[in-house]
Length: 79
Length: 401
Ligand code: HEM
Ligand code: SF4
Image (cartoon, rainbow over all chains, first blue to last red; front, side):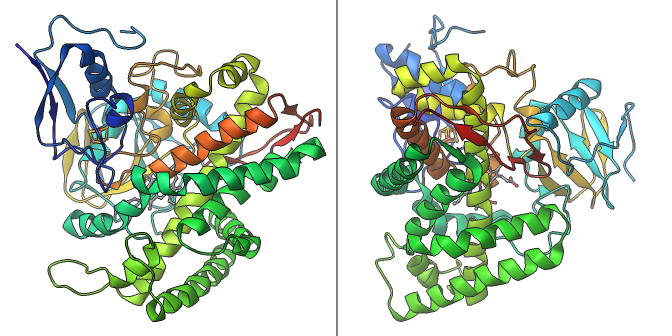
């Protein structure tokens, strides 16, 4: 199954951390929110790392990585 | 009065007092580990302190229960208006939609060349001297100039603007209401003249914030913002943007002057700078709390709160909560989830200026270390950390010119 990145429009308040750590997946809009919010974005295999970083970078918990097995490793490999 | 379901200690720690650098974090750490909640009796109204990351985040994300009728637990009767801070709900969202575009990453990219040039200019002024008080001679001048430029105002106005800002903060944080009032009146008068000028000669509202505020409609009623509201927005931005950035710069350089390894990392790898900025904001949260007022009786895990009570959302505790951040007192690049720190708040009131602040701070880290890679703290005189909203009162640095 293709991994997807769920971007919760109601929770996103525009911290801009997701598109900073996942520039190949996400971008910023006029107000600083993530442009793709409100969608389940398909994540190509090579970008799974970025997707996982985006998930763990959002302080609003607005981002969830779905159907990504096996778990991708993030940049630093901490628990 | 709220009921203590679990045992909940009373805190007598007055976070308005000065300490040694980073001294407030020691106090916060101790309290968080002693008990999840505290009731502080250090102000007239008192306040309930939330100290753990998860609790603090929940507080930020439930603005209907925890309202911005109070924005500082230490100073619940705020005395001056703050916009957009003091609004809630749809009214707040509408004003944020008006101002957000001027502080978005895209807008910040537009001012980056100016900020870089001004930063370099100030550093080059200081470099031959071989020493400076980093706080007074750099850390407040730079963000003020950038801020004025962002508002389309002449940076030379910084010469009188900076002392006013100092007086407002000095007044608020020392309880000298009169000094704060007269300085904020000066700032308001200054903006009053600028706003009137923009009414007569509007600039392109796509890039000029003041022109946009003049034209903005509040919402369904199509009413423009009142003149006073526009002035309040300008004053709020001044209050929220300058003391904070100065403070963040002070902590970064206090840290780097004493940690050669971290400095070497930034000198050797300028690409690490954005991550370093984020980690500095986590490690040295200068806004240690946001206040909120409870709008309806609510039960948190083990704590019942009544309507009208004041809550302390402990940013300074949350950012150093070991349940969230392993080895929380250590500066570490590449932390997983470091970006989830709450140094800029969260929820609908998350810091409007965060993108600007990040870029400003990153520029300084790059440009300073390119020119003055090695420096040290110049005097043995003890450094002082102001309470309330933290900042180092001075930071004497020296280097080989
Ligand atoms: C390192 C620098 C900064 C830090 C640590 C910081 C921190 C914060 C925090 C924690 C909040 C949330 C307060 C709350 O929820 O009650 C906040 C809100 C705010 N900040 Fe910042 N800030 C910084 C720089 C700036 C700058 C440069 C500006 C603008 C020029 C700014 C403008 C604002 C405004 C207007 C709000 C209120 C937003 C609202 O209520 O909707 N800040 N800031
Ligand atoms: S990090 Fe979270 S809150 Fe920030 S823009 Fe991305 S999704 Fe929105």
